[in-house]
Length: 166
Image 1 (cartoon, helix red, strand yellow):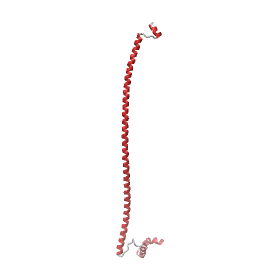
Image 2: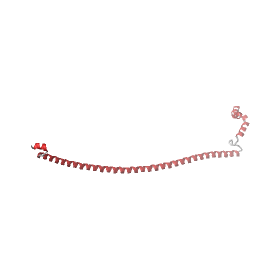
Image 3: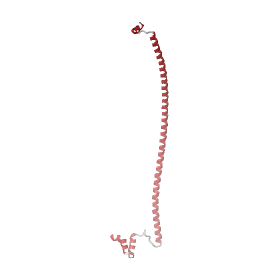
Image 4: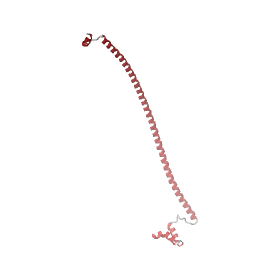
């Protein structure tokens, strides 16, 4: 009747009580194991969060270093740019000065030629001769016409052909 009563009325016998007791003990042991596992997981999560915080601090530190480095590079590039601009200005000024010196040199060369011509003319004039550069071309042509009889005929045509065309 114990078995039938157990089935019909749900009453527990000793065996069922022992079985339920054993299951409760297993659950408590499993619960302790789960608690230990949860404690270990909390420890791992704390370690992970601590490592993550350290990484974030390192990233922030590296970010500051990179910004500082970029600022130093920008400062250097600005100084280099200013120095390059200054050197280009100096180069441009040097180029302009050399250009002016060349122009002055050319003017001095022309002036020297003219002075040499004048000096030569003065020296020739003192000797009673006129320098061809200061003799008017009309006077020179008249002198050549006066001496055309001394030129061979074919030279005569080449020399005075231009005047015959005019």
